[in-house]
Length: 333
Image 1: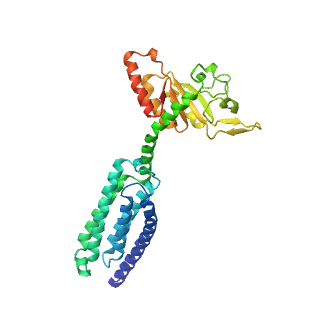
Image 2: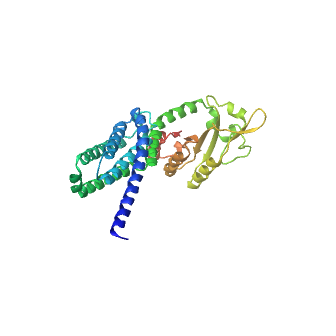
Image 3: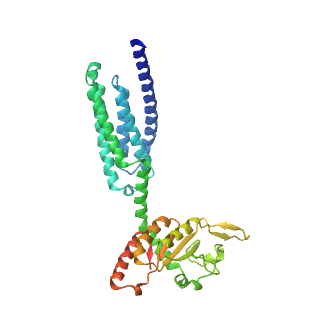
């Protein structure tokens, strides 16, 4: 291949690569322009600013006449990270729902975007000769800013990680409300719910299964529970970790059913499961609270503690664990 042919091939490759970046930028700008309106009405600070600055960077880079390749990559990276963050925060309804550390990281990201915007403006204002002389220096600064954006992505994590962190924060905020709701519903339960198994109605589900009990729950059995739509009580002794594993597996595979007026079986999609955990050694309390985190979305849990069997030191420890249980939405009786 001659020198001219090699040069022509390189120019064609550069043209195709530039077109590819242009298309990517156009897509990012289109998405970001739409998400900018979401950011404006979001209670999360800095989101609207981040979107505006990212769009400004793209606008400046598209007007450049030289050294466009590196700047376009930088603009595209800026758009992508802002799009990810806005997508992660778009469903937040209150500013208090966002952890303060994430807000601080978002403020730092906005400062990085401002620096990139200023850098791009200076690059766009240079004439062709000055841009040619500054080519290597600009390339190094582009890489430096890309590294800073990558660090910002590491701080925030992937988009799913951001959502998970927000979800965990939201769940933690809801624990107090869930505990209060549980306390109210426990007060509404008849006294027989906390007595020995034979006193409970036979159609109520027990685990482990006992004689005279069934997984087929009759609607008449459920109706006696005041202020609760549908409720099934599970009583289980947890003496060791194997009991915990069996209990979790049972809850995951349980399909509660009832008979309607035509004697047809139907699944209880809105069933409230109320579990009474008893005879649990103190050493297993951390494992039981881990159990709660796994199955709390399925039902409410209470724990019965035999205080009279505890020493003074153990009773003090039990009181402390009671408070921890309450913080996790677990009612310790």
